Image (cartoon, rainbow, N blue to C red):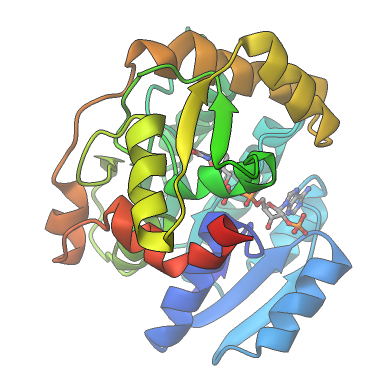
Length: 290
Ligand SMILES: NC(=O)c1ccc[n+]([C@@H]2O[C@H](COP(=O)([O-])OP(=O)(O)OC[C@H]3O[C@@H](n4cnc5c(N)ncnc54)[C@H](OP(=O)(O)O)[C@@H]3O)[C@@H](O)[C@H]2O)c1
C-alpha cells in the first residue's frame, strides 16, 4: 500500500509518516518548504519518499497521486486552506484512491464561531460529495499546542493564557496518528466520523501542574486577557486572521468549557488507551525545562 501524507513536516502529519513507516507502509510525504523536505530526507525513514509541493497548485497536487492507494489530508489554517483541501480531494477522487482520512476539528459546522471550523466543514462537504470513502478525525485540542508557548514560560514557571478554568479533553498527536494509520488501512466502503479525545478533560492549570510534576519544575497557569494574548501571539509572527481565530477559540470558546467530554474512540480504533498528559510530558520534557 502507498499512502500520500500531506503536512508531513507538521505536528500530526509528521507523526503519521513515522507511524506508517514503522508499520512497513510506503509513504509519499508532502511538505511545502524545501527545508522541511530536506529534514524529512535526513530522517531517512524506511519506505518514505519526501516530496516538495504547494497544495495551492492543483496541477502539482494531481501529480502527487500517481500510484497512491489512500491519502491522509491535513492542511494548515491559512487563507487558501479550503482551496488546498478541495484540490487534494478532487485529485484523490480522480485518482480513485480507496480512502481519504481527513484531519478536521470538533465542532466543524457552517455556522461555527471559528473561521477554521467553517473551513473544515466546507472541506468535509467537498469530501462527502466526492464519492471517495473517507474518515473524519475530530480532535478539539492537541496537547502539543502547549509546546508553542514554552518560550512564554517565565523563569518562575508562570505561563499566562486566556483559557480560564475551561476544561478540554486534550489529545496527544501520537494518538491521532495511531487512529489515522488504522483508518488508512480500512478497506471498507463506509464513511467514518470520529470524535477523538484524550483520556480526561484538562484545564490549562491542571495540564501545566501535571507536566511540572514530570519535568521537576513548578509550572503554574495564570489567567490572561484576550488582548494580552493577541499582542504576544502576533509578536510570535502569527497572521492577524489566525491570531484572532485562536484568541476567539481560547477566550471565547474553550474558556467556557466548550468541547469538554471524552470519547472511547482512540481505544476502540487502536486497541490502546489514549496517552495521558503525563505520557506527553515524559516524551516532551526537554521543551518544558529549557
Ligand atoms: N491544534 C489543534 O489543537 C487542532 C485541533 C483540531 C484540528 N486541528 C487542525 O489541524 C491542522 C493543523 O495540523 P498540524 O498542527 O499538524 O499542522 P502544522 O504542524 O501547522 O503543519 C502544517 C503542515 O502543512 C504544510 N503546509 C503548509 N502550507 C502548505 C502548502 N501551501 N502546501 C503544502 N504543504 C503546506 C507544512 O509544510 P512546511 O513545513 O513545508 O511549511 C506543514 O507540514 C489544521 O487544519 C487545524 O485546524 C488542530
